[in-house]
Image 1 (tube, helix red, strand yellow):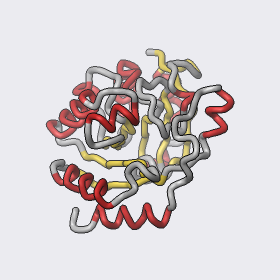
Image 2 (cartoon, rainbow, N blue to C red):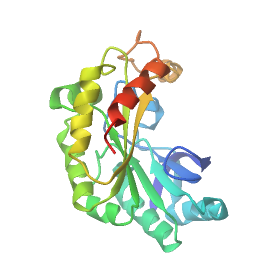
Image 3 (cartoon, one colour):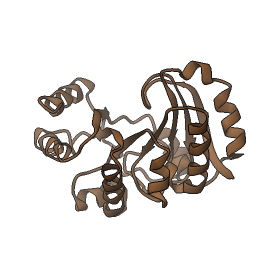
Image 4 (cartoon, rainbow, N blue to C red):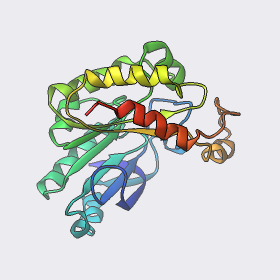
Length: 234
């Protein structure tokens, strides 16, 4: 089974619990206005078999006693068949598996989730209109994936990028809290401050950047909003 990856991180500390082997798969249907990896939109990169990738992972297995393997992107669901194959292999080796996803662009979700221990779900927006503005895509598929996660009682982390002038306000955060309260098995919620480090990539790739002129999100304000979000939530 062949797949396409952009890169790997052998000592990841943020994409799931413990120390993790993070694989960045290429391909994504979304065109998020704040995307920091536009080079991963297309299905290209290093062509690799699931067996070859597993060998790389197992070289570091002893480091992942309290961690595991995370598949990120791009959007890993784009390569659903490859993802299922490598997830199965990882579970056969006793590895904890996590999936960092927006829930868009794949298929065989139930099969994928069967071999996934943790879903790190990226929230783009809460309503149909803003989701379309931010991603260029409809929200229905993402919500359908989230529903399947809930039906299968998957443990979940939630992530939301906070952008100045778009969702960096109390009203949005309180609406986000209401949304989160409708979900179960949520172990963690993170608000990620928007940054502009990706601008050089857009210039190099000659891709127009829709948030040009928007400054980095103030980290302290982002922390304050996160405190408001998680208060009395868990």
